[in-house]
Image 1 (cartoon, rainbow, N blue to C red):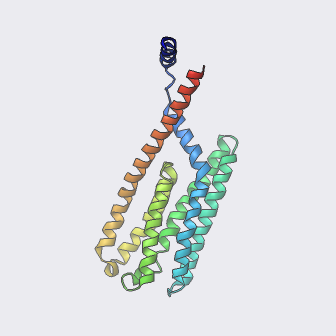
Image 2 (cartoon, rainbow, N blue to C red; image 1 turned 90 degrees about the horizontal axis):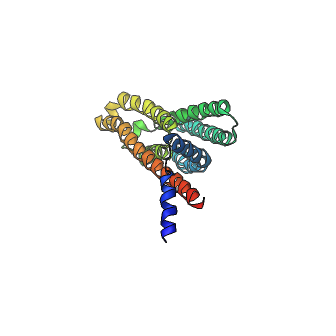
Length: 220
């Protein structure tokens, strides 16, 4: 027992738990690239619901264009994430990250553009209200899914708010001031939640890497 205690102290004395922030971020990005494709497939469900409800709306043609834009963005992000997992070298990875980030921005705009066909009939039509709720919930969920990567999250949220905010201003006589205030508060709220998710994710990865280092040191 005494020998085992000395071995453990010797392993700890070598400081095996020194994990850099760069190692944590690299591992976090690796997990993001490997799993984001499966997570984003879940967006097909709300898009299908929006497409179904749009059949009962007068502006269904424009809604169809917006839904198609979302599908293009999802496909582009899926292709980019697959290419990132196979990318060799920093230059190739940087190129595909630019593609992914561009698709994230386009996705944010496409989601809130779906609000345009229903914004005039909110409060008067159940289908319009349902579409509005689905859009806001989907934006919030998507922000949490991509929260671990700061740039895709920021671009997606920027695209969504940049498209949604002008709508609440232009149609303030129809909607009233409450949607405008809610839209202004939506960004900071999602940023705060994303920061919490990112910190928790980094903490879990750091603990995992420290456990791996400790196990390796004890084995030696």
